[in-house]
Image (cartoon, rainbow, N blue to C red; front, side):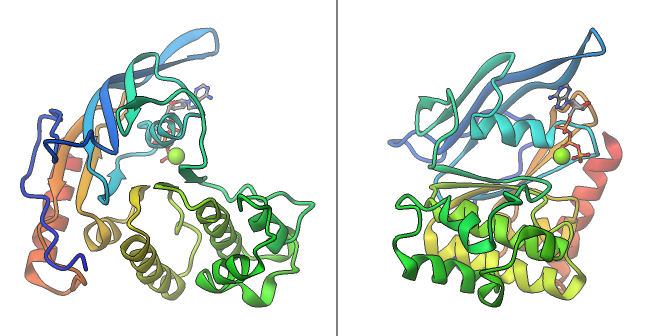
Length: 267
Ligand SMILES: Nc1ncnc2c1ncn2[C@@H]1O[C@H](COP(=O)(O)OP(=O)(O)OP(=O)(O)O)[C@@H](O)[C@H]1O
Ligand SMILES: [Mg+2]
């Protein structure tokens, strides 16, 4: 259904680009900056970000450690406020968290006192009275045999998958993923990339995903945002103009990978 998706062009200026004349973008960053106080001194984490993400896009965010990727996702989720600028979702300023925006943290953050099923139920609007939905989510992330397990009994990758199911439980419009596949072995990672692709395509989600894996970014994304080292600024936005499903061995795939490396090396 997303075969041939084409976002159209490569930008390097970070200018706002609105893809639909009528509807506001699903996510819009306008002159967003974030400062923290660290050890009594101001620290600039992100500076002057401008970006518009259309409904249904899969945007990956890449950049060096400490450049503000997690901070950016936390602000879109409503867990942090920008120091300057505005973040809007469907035209409304983000003032706090909402079930419409599911966030999978860099570390899984499951409730240790609750089983996998219970953790997921906490994300369901009806607290899991709809058992069918609970089991669909468990199957989706391949944890149906671990419904009664506690987080301490899971591997790191299994915990990440449980966290993904919990984020999906609220049927969000926007899925924010902070290196969700970081702790997975190569084979499980490939399987989860395929699952993510399927979830994105079937649920008409808008995804913003942080990753350090350039292949993963090219494989999944409609666009890739490259941030400079701290303070993070937008160094480039690459539209990946390849049909889905993508072939990692294709020549074009390598061209995108090289383009990303070039921007990262320049920054
Ligand atoms: N709550 C906080 N209080 C103070 N400083 C913070 C806070 N959160 C983040 N920072 C600072 O903001 C900067 C960006 O941090 P952030 O976690 O967003 O980076 P990142 O790009 O996600 O890094 P990584 O790839 O290592 O996860 C860092 O310098 C960090 O010290
Ligand atoms: Mg981070």
